[in-house]
Image (cartoon, rainbow, N blue to C red; front, side, top):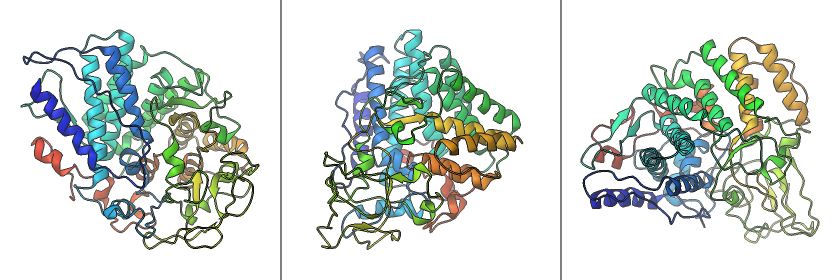
Length: 497
C-alpha cells in the first residue's frame, strides 16, 4: 500500500503547478480517501465515504483553469488579455488562446491529472462492494470524467484496482473509450433516481445520464472519425438516439425556463438544472472577469470578443440586463454582457483607480499589453444571487435535440424548436435554419458555460477562430502531458506534438 499511496501523492502533486491568477477561490480537497491494504493487493474502502469524496471532486469544474480553461479559452468566445503583469503567468493563458500549447502546459497537465484521478476513484467505489444505487452513481461519475479525457485527448488510460503499481495502465482508443462510457451510462441509468428539476441537483440522476448519452451520440461522428479533424459523418441512427435521450429528460419534467438568468440563481422556479457541482461555488466565473474597482473586486481578466457579442440582437434577454444599482450590496453589477460605463452600488460612475479615467468597458481588446478597461465582460452567475455551479442544463439538451433533428433532415422541426426558445429569450424568430445559424444559437444560449470547444470542433470551426495562430488540425486534440508519457509507456503522444 505504501507504493500506491506514494503514487497517489505524486499524481496529486503534479496539479500544484496549475494556472492561478490573483486568488484561486476553488476549495482545496482535504479529504482524499484511499483504501487500506495489507500490501497483497486492493482492499475495499467505504463506498459511502468514497462516493461523498467523488461528489466533492466535482468542485474542480468550477475553477477558471484546467478543465474549464481547456474547454473555453481556445475558442472564439473568450480572450484572456494580459494587463500589465496581470494574467501573464508565463504565457499560459495566451498560448491557450492562440493554440500554441505544448505537452508541458500547466492546464493540460492539471486537467489530465484531475480527470484521471477522479475516474480511478470511481473504480475504487465500484470495487468496494457498493449498493446497486451507489454503483450506478459511481458509473455515472466515472463516465463523466472519462468523457472529458476522451474529448480533450482522444486516448484514455485505464487501471483496474487489482493491478499493482508496477503495471502500466492500458490505454483505450477513442472509439474504445466511447463504447466503454456508453456502456457505463446504459448500465447506470436504471439504477439512478428520476429526480425532476430542482435548484440544487448535486446527485447523479437519470436525466444526467441521459444528458451525457445524448452528448456522446451527438458527437459520435467526431469521436469515431478516422482522423480527429474528420470528415465527420452524422448518422441518422445516432441522431435518433440523441432525440430519444432528450425526450427521456423531458419526460422527467425538465423544460426551458422563461427567465434566462434565474437559471443561475437559487430561484425555486428553475426548471433547467439537471446537475450541479456538490462542492465549490460559481464565484470564479465573476471574479475572473470583473474589474478591480467593481464590487466585488475582481481579477480583471477574461472578456468576450466583439464578433461574438455582435451575434446577439438588441432585445435578446441573453445579451444582458442593466445593473439595479439600488444601494444594496453588489447591485452595481448587471447581468449578461457588461459594456460601456460601469456604476457602483449607488448608481454613481466608477473611476478606474489605475488609469484615473471613468471605467468604460470597450469593444476592442488585445491579447497582450491590454489597458484595464478593454474588453466586454460576461456575467451569468451574479455575485449577489448565484446558486450552485451548473454542470448540466436542460437548454443544452434542448439544443442537442434541435441539432440532431436538423442533421437528420427535419429542418422545419428544428427551426420550430429554435424559434420557441428564441421567443422565451425575447429574440426575433429566424426565417430559416442551417449549420451556421444553429451554431450561433448554441453560442447565444450557452456562452461561457465551458463547452464551446466541443461545439466548435463538431461544427468544423475550432481551428479558424479569432486569434488562432496555429490552425493545423492536430490542435483539435491536446497533447498527452510529457510526464504521463514518461510514466506510462503504453501512452503514445498525439500526432503533431
